[in-house]
Length: 257
Ligand SMILES: Nc1ncnc2c1ncn2[C@@H]1O[C@H](COP(=O)(O)OP(=O)(O)OP(=O)(O)O)[C@@H](O)[C@H]1O
Image (cartoon, rainbow, N blue to C red; front, side, top):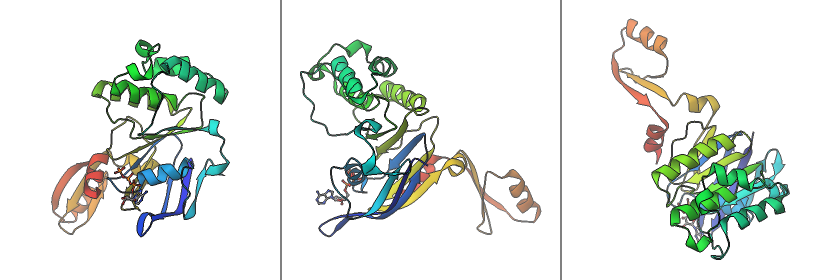
């Protein structure tokens, strides 16, 4: 288990941004998804210790989140004020040194930042700024990185590069993507969906694998998921198949967003 959030609550005045939120995330690559105003930013502000929760617990790799050292957790925030004069490779190299493991060359190569490595932050396009900030979270080999809307302002090619790198790195560094849009990745280990400060769904391991299949509905209201034998049995017992449709994470999310 990578992250365990139990009964986490945070209110701003009488707005319950997080209302007794409980979910778990597996090691590997996970998504915290939710439409605008669902509480994602509040969660990431709590886990990065910018604000305190009113109540509840977050445990990361079995430890209270506040007990993790700065080198063990990487963050890439969506809204960041970054000094324009700083050069890409200088910054990543320094982060690596400060965190005790300078893997900045590998990260520059994986995120395909070679072309801009000598540039100053102010000289980068919006997409490269985003990619650079996201890449910086992985420098120093932290145990887990939280990426807030990593794909905003990023074109489709860069998005594919980033998703590939996330999956590749998730064998060594746990990746948690916080976003209001779902971007399919070839491997995902868990997902939590928030709405209005509450957990609408939390899928892990085999629940997620079931999502890439089909769903059959029968005239008695029964739904069969990914089970051809069960469908056969129902048909043989005289039930009528009403519909059969592909089941995907996207359709699961569409029904709940
Ligand atoms: N500082 C604040 N003061 C008052 N209300 C706030 C504050 N920050 C957030 N809220 C409210 O808390 C709720 C959750 O907001 P939050 O920013 O955590 O959601 P979000 O899922 O990150 O949204 P978005 O995708 O739009 O960034 C919203 O109703 C929001 O208006």
